[in-house]
Length: 256
Length: 256
Image (cartoon, rainbow over all chains, first blue to last red; front, top):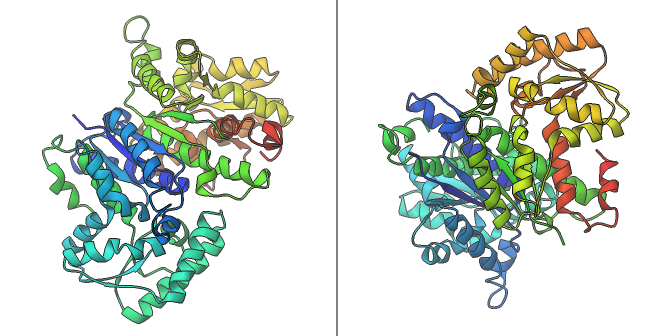
């Protein structure tokens, strides 16, 4: 028996759609690793909520009023995912994890996965010791990855202010506005600069829009890119199949 | 104001995930056509249900008992999508439309889109007069497309029995089992045979798994392939934005 799981998306919607693809891929991988045939009916039931949520980074830049605006629609959608039977939910947006503790606290009956903790555990298990982080200003502001990486014993390098502005431009004027060429130019420039400065370091694409613009980029070829959405999708698949396979979750991690 | 819409998927899950991508693309196109900026918050709220549903073609081959097995989980998921506020729902599986009339009848308060009728209307509007149809045996059995195409005044050619078996192999042993190379080989052989026999005809990829194996195929380049999922995704986007744009739905159809 598999467990029902949920995906909280809409931040942005293209990243949410892509997360479902990654989750379905991870489930198929799980079945293959367990030696089971991949059939439609063997996939766990899962629900995707794509709801309008006010801009996360914008809210984090405002202190006081407005700072909680994104919370309300996320709470509502999470409650509905819980009512649909979800036992675990993944949030398909890095910056939105600034509200993770509140979301988890309000719905103690479900597990709300934490993307940065999953990524830190994954990288530590792979023997990495240093990473560079491409993310939104909102994600840097709440030290989402820095904290989780430090807890796992990993060192974290950030881009310079001008490079951080370039990442934001690639996210908003690039991916979110549908200009993938601009996105690729912005992201690859920053990724290459990080690689020049820090050497053979794992580069965490800590915003769901970054892989959409950077993967498949010729300029970024050879860089050690880590897609947190992929790590999170595998973690969600592990929760969906928890207890259903003779290999358990550890057998699955081995193929990551 | 946009309307909440739903997507009934899981048949198979990869096709359901891809349908969300097509829907998000269609929404972005809609905003651009209306001269509005593409922002996360401007997308309509939408929900994807990916639930296990017994094999549709298998059920249609059995008369009597078992024939209604796929209906129950579809009804349940559709009821939940309606409860979430969906005003219109698209079914991300062609064969499942064999149960369309029952689904629509049980939930008169929402519109359940009909993929074949949307495709027939789209092709008729483009001036097509003849199409060839690649689909599952279940879809042929219920004459899903033949009926809708005839109603719109279009002639419909079917593959030969051996070619139909090849399509089924590409769907089940190919896409659904994760072997895209096999899927491409099966589908492109049939598409090329249809093209040789019927000339410059629009080839309807009337099973959601077919585009996943055939699009990007070098062998199929130059063929006039029609993806019903894309047509259906645009139709669902039109419903979501109904009444919200000065151009209405007709302005959107023009950019298809």
